[in-house]
Image 1 (cartoon, rainbow, N blue to C red):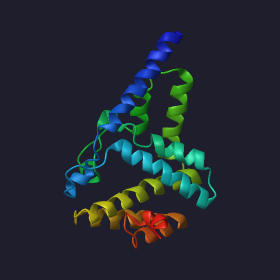
Image 2 (cartoon, rainbow, N blue to C red; image 1 turned 135 degrees about the vertical axis):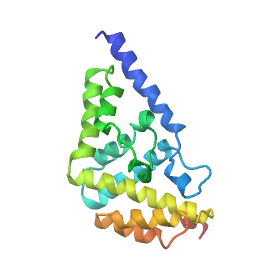
Image 3 (cartoon, rainbow, N blue to C red; image 1 turned 45 degrees about the vertical axis):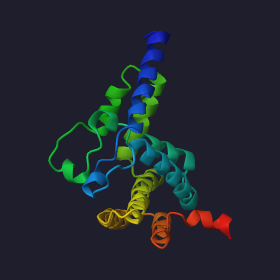
Image 4 (cartoon, helix red, strand yellow; image 1 turned 90 degrees about the vertical axis):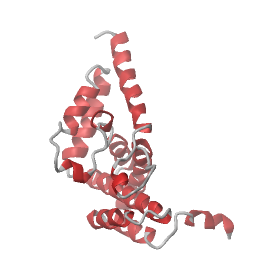
Length: 191
């Protein structure tokens, strides 16, 4: 490939990632949430949660944030399929989707992104465990926020994601979140 082709292929991937800013997290519709968060909004906070958990667990925060950033990027191609829907569908693996997404990107970019997704999907390293917990903890926190907005069915998501947490730090933060309101952070300035 030429430099121009590499640049266009890589830029095409970046443009595709913009679709994550418009794609809704469809699982929340099952809970009755009328206007759920986007995939990009979820991924952003998941990366922040991941870095925080990594510091607490002694993992590499940059690596965890990177894993979290790319964990749902395949949803530009397959959508956000809720867990109940996955029971009825057979789809390509996230690794296969990612390979197609970066097929025309600069070789270093393609290999880097494929490597991150491969690791997230298949490794059992501390960083991957923390990244998976970050995904679940972010979902639980989002569920708590939806509960505050009156979406009572979000309680099932809160309970089920809390039960799946593995790291002591994620469990500790989840338990703290259960005792707080989403506006709690403002109290440090309102004292």
